[in-house]
Amino acid sequence: MALRLIGTTSDEGDCPTLYEIEGTDEILVQGDRETNPEHLVQLRDTKPCETFVRVPRSLLTRFAPRVEAPKLQPFSSISHLFREFRHTAWRLETRCGYASDRRSPKWARWQAGEDVANDTSAWLENVAGQTAAGKRFERVRLVDEPPTEGQRFLLASAPGNVGAGEDIRNLTRAQAEQLRLPDYDVWLFDSKIVARFAFDENDTTLGVHVTEDPAEVLATCQARDAAWHHAVPTQQFAR
Image 1: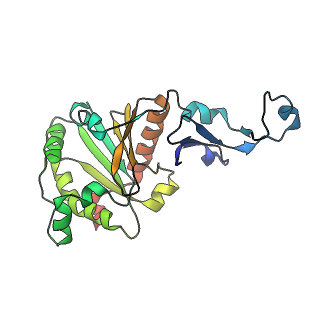
Image 2: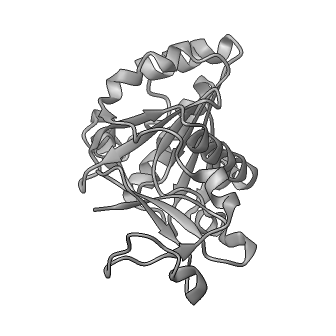
Image 3: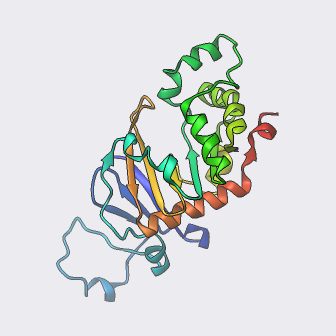
């Protein structure tokens, strides 16, 4: 089962971290093993297979989930949010490629050497309408060095999105790792609704986990702020 990083305070010179064990309701806690014999003798109902770790209270207050793990639901279940959000819709894209891109007619045309920067779509029409109303569509896309084929396709098609009103910026994967950004894709609506993607091994979207859990919303807002500060606008990055 995959682990999803929830949050860490390791930037404070330590290693305490919380992970979600995906597909379960369990949280994995990383920290220093408790070795104080005076403490160990006071622990109750312990089993030989159990161990105990120390973590700072700040880790739990900042990142511990407050609600049950959200269930996986179809991506279509959040389609209304792209019209109904009030202020900002922000996306973090972390993958090397997406099956939805490879299956699109635009992909074959791009591989044939055509310019795909000025295509139109229902998505771009909605972006244009929402941004004309004063709302913001923003993305940060991670790019490997060198870029993968899927990332080069997104760089080639990005001018159309930017022209419709999206603010798309790019960040190298090495920078993202230094910033401890999440390693999963997510939409954040109005800084209060998080839609975290689930993919299979072929980059096909399986659905989204939607939550308003304050801890997860806060962590996503913090990731957004860090990513947005360091990411480079698409036109500048492409050069």
